[in-house]
Amino acid sequence: MLMTFGIISLNINGVIAVAGRQILSEWKAELKTEVKKDDQHQSLQYHLTRLVGGEDRTKLETTGFACDNTSWSLVCITNNPVKIDMSTMHVHLQSSYPDHKSANENTTTTTIVRPYAMQENPWVMNDITPVIITTTEPTQLTCDHNHKHPAVIFSSGGYTGNIFHEFNENLLPLFITTRMFKSHVHFIVVDHKPSFIYKYRRVFSRLSNHEIINPLNDSSVHCFPSVITGLKYHKFLGINTSENPQNSYSMPDFRDFIRQTYKLKTQSIFDNLNGSDPPSLLLISRQTTRKFLNQQEMVKMMEELGFRVIIASSADEMSNVEKFSHVINSCSVMVGAHGAGLANEMFLPDGAVMVQVRPLGFQWDVDSFYSAPAPGMGLEYLEYMMQPDESSLVDEYGLDHPILQDTASVAAEGGYDAARKMYLDKQDLRLNLSRFRETLIEALRLVGRYKDVANA
Ligand SMILES: *[C@@H]1O[C@H](CO)[C@@H](O)[C@H](O)[C@H]1NC(C)=O
Ligand SMILES: *[C@@H]1O[C@H](CO)[C@@H](O)[C@H](O)[C@H]1NC(C)=O
Ligand SMILES: *[C@@H]1O[C@H](CO)[C@@H](O)[C@H](O)[C@H]1NC(C)=O
Ligand SMILES: *[C@@H]1O[C@H](CO)[C@@H](O)[C@H](O)[C@H]1NC(C)=O
Ligand SMILES: *[C@@H]1O[C@H](CO)[C@@H](O)[C@H](O)[C@H]1NC(C)=O
Ligand SMILES: *[C@@H]1O[C@H](CO)[C@@H](O)[C@H](O)[C@H]1NC(C)=O
Image (cartoon, rainbow, N blue to C red; front, side, top):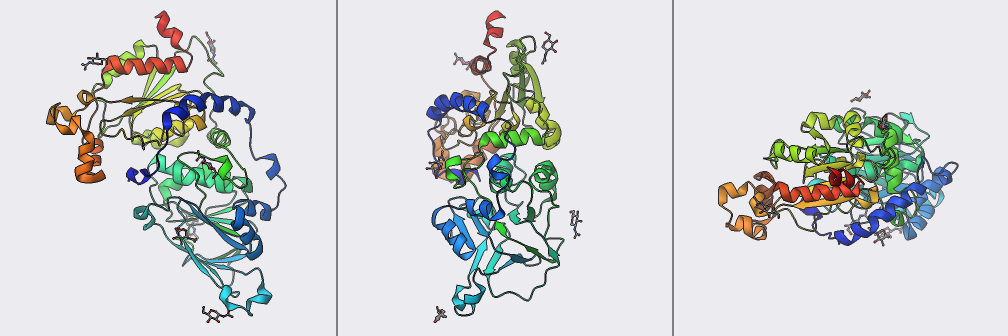
């Protein structure tokens, strides 16, 4: 499924090296941003129109309805009252010009939105419940519930269950789309997935003062002053402030929001730099595929370098965000193989280092999920590229086999699925410790603790 991102290619290395430090220093100036000052006293109309730009904004202002249809997201906004029939997810929208309406019946339009921020991925979009928005004559529906705050409709289906996707397609877009409403907003969650809603209940309850409406167990008619269908997406695990016509919240704001939501103490690794405490390193240890076969030796080497090593290995432990976010927030370095839940970097303090171990055959530069967003989060990013002799596939095929020496040939012959089966599902990792040690020393340098090694 990750291949679906393949069309986007970023020049990672240049960006990281230059932007990392800049953003870190800009960050300081933006701290403690709760709700932006500008947003405090603005009207609902003002916030709604700022969600779209250009012609779409004009259209929203004149007709009361407009959609922002950019690459990954489709967001439709009404700033007129709506009646929503939860049993069919049909949104009935009043026209801006009820007087003219009968004169021109052709202003009636129907728009269908599958409210998930991955519009260009047809496989996942097919599973997302469609929401039907119709501009019609006032319908005969009567409101069972009248609300005075707007609604936001989004899906908790799709790829939730995978933390990268949870942040990428749900939590970040939800923040971008709703933060300025200061929690005066109702969430209507289609494809309601209780485990996901429970996992991030603190995020939802900070973004909305109201109980989540679940159409699966509420088939009544709810009426709202306006509704936003779908969430605005910017980029991988990030926020692009210039893409926001409203010039709204930034990534530091999101990280601040997350820290406050989970009461994470450490804002930056440099805040409480205490020469006598060893820096903590979180090792994310997969138990199924992409296991570290020489994990014991790895840990021993890490400890010799002066790290206090914390090993996270159970999915249960990692799914308890309240607890696990604190563990991560206490660390200066996080190490894991691709696919090991590296989006947990969201909880690292500023200045911390994320080290991604790239399995053999999974080293395409399009795989920028973690490298590209790091600077925006105030993090440093390093990667360790596995060599053929560090792969467990050697045991099966021998070092000279094309599967080890020419990994591109596997994808060329069998497509992404074959490559995925081979390199993600069948491979374990046996890192060359003297080479990997160099990466960790670089991490120590970045967190300002290299002297510990030099003095050892
Ligand atoms: C959004 O864009 C896609 C592709 O250009 C198009 O097929 C679709 O109809 C658009 N949807 C809306 C609601 O404008
Ligand atoms: C509405 O659209 C139909 C077909 O597109 C057209 O025949 C009819 O004249 C239009 N009516 C008005 C009032 O514009
Ligand atoms: C729907 O289910 C949720 C929990 O899943 C519960 O809190 C809520 O009260 C239910 N609502 C109705 C109308 O049954
Ligand atoms: C941010 O958005 C602007 C405006 O849409 C765009 O020109 C720019 O390329 C985007 N930057 C990134 C890093 O995505
Ligand atoms: C820093 O280290 C000293 C001992 O050297 C200890 O008393 C103090 O609590 C530590 N501070 C922090 C913030 O950990
Ligand atoms: C480990 O890497 C080092 C440095 O690249 C190299 O010299 C050494 O031969 C490697 N060890 C093994 C067992 O491959």
